[in-house]
Amino acid sequence: MGRSADKAERLFFAFAFRFALCAFHSIHFQHHAMGFAKLSLKGRALKLLAQREHSRSELETKLARHVNVEEGDDLGAILDELTAKDFINPERVAASVVHRRASRMGTQRVVQELRSKGLDDDLIKATANELRSTEMERAQAVWKSKFGGKPPASTPQEKARQMRFLAARGFTGDVVHKVLKHAGSDANDDGSDYS
Image 1 (cartoon, helix red, strand yellow):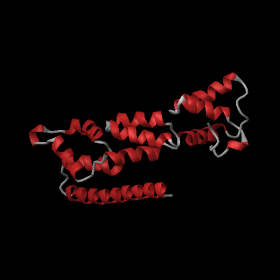
Image 2: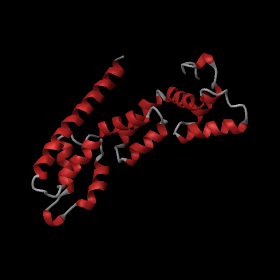
Image 3: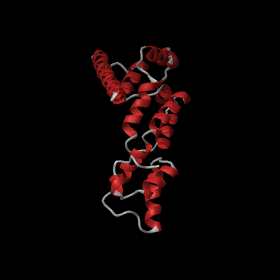
Image 4: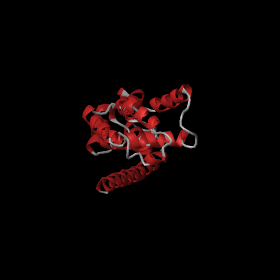
């Protein structure tokens, strides 16, 4: 219960942060809208952060083409300031990815997405270890949502199709084999007897 309460608390604060950021964002744009001013680099960063969590690496990539050296834009300094004010937070980025992807994807796919966002290896490893503890249950739920109404795979072609389906979603080979081995058995519907 404590683990889910901590997760719920983190999500609550993430949503509260997002709401506050959106409020700041709207005030910032109302001020600039009156003079039809071009959106500043910091304004663009805040706009992106108001839409969803972004890593520093993602923001660097997205904002690099908007840097105007003549106007004195310093992307590094802006991102440092946003990081110092906790607008850019790698832990929130990882939690957001897990929240959006973990119910449908295996640990490998979630880790791949975290790496693509340029997050720290230690954070990725910690997140992966947390996800591995629920890998079997998540794989079973994904399999059940796709194939649960059908009898277990009776032909090698159907079994291969189901294996490809789970593997493409980032579940490991041993997890895929265990899920298919116990597919359709009523005794293991809760996923607790897999070994």
